[in-house]
Image 1 (cartoon, helix red, strand yellow):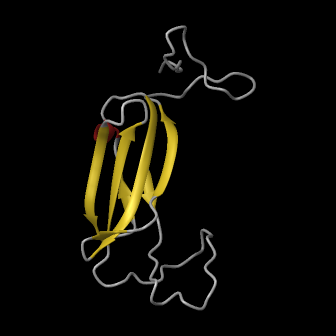
Image 2: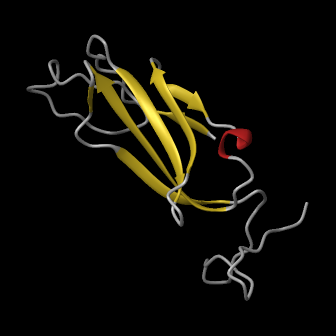
Amino acid sequence: MVLEWRHRDRTQQLEEDIYDTEDDENIGPETGVTYALEVIRTDTSAVLHTDTNISGTTITVTEGNVSDYEGEIKLSIWSERDGFESWQKQERTFLKLRSEGRVTESGDNRTTEDDEYRIVEA
């Protein structure tokens, strides 16, 4: 899973509108900014992966980083500067499957009677 984001700089963004598009260019970053991310299981809040002191705007989270867990996970990414974390984290929750998931005609994920997600066998 490859994650990409753009730098933002509060000191340079005081008067212009910022639009979120794929063509957005980096603004900044502020001096000393790094990024951190965390991947957790939503059912137990167990941390599957953390990464800190990221200076760029891209990171690859490999299958091995998030173990063999299969189910719903939450990914959070935030900036850090001078010992402070950003006020708002970017968080996304999604279903992580080891293989392509099976879905119903309405697009819902199929599960077994034991609430295990069904996958397409390779």
